[in-house]
Length: 264
Image 1 (tube, rainbow, N blue to C red):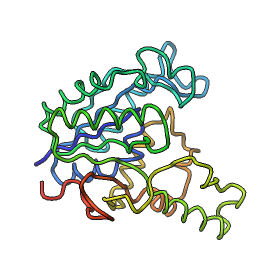
Image 2: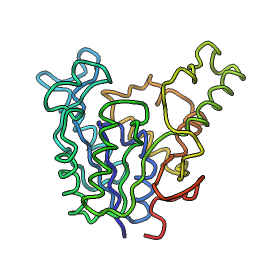
Image 3: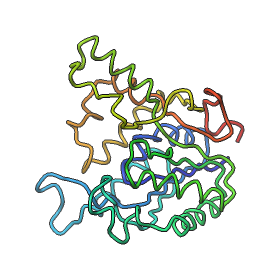
Image 4: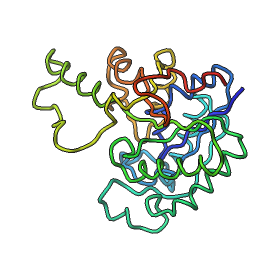
């Protein structure tokens, strides 16, 4: 048995980008640990959603534990930073936010967990945090440094296949599932995911999609039944979330791995 530690920025990130590999590792007999940098204090909920006197972060912590149980994580830890909001918002500069955290100090917090768990594998995000969110970028910086401090042998950067995303959206527009005018401008400089050529791991998590979707549903304060994640038909969900993509330093070029826990 090996140990996988999956490090994320906010509650609900875990099920979206790594829920499949977490559940896969659990079902194969490995120990799974979830670490979240913030408690997701920034978010919007409908009036009356929270109980009287309840703070959003309290609900999101509960939701994280529910999601973790579905995905097979046996330990959940929060590093204690607050949500920084989207890039460019005034909240980015507030003391105590994860974006303002000293990388070395935050890495020491995570490294302590990695050492305690004797982690074999750590998942973080790519250097742009997937899509430029400050807390996601910080997960990359903190996670990579923590792995160095703790001597964690395998580190995978969770990301998206930007080329596949483009192909999928263009096909959806061609077949009428999406209006051509709704296609994003792929050449406007915004980076979402990474090019296929630099990805090194492709994990088929189709078998675990029911768990992945159930974990999303557990985050009801942020992922409603009408959301993109839950409203799409099963076929579309499988196409969008049935593969999880990663980059591992020293691997490649091209896809050389299909299982983060192989050989452990």
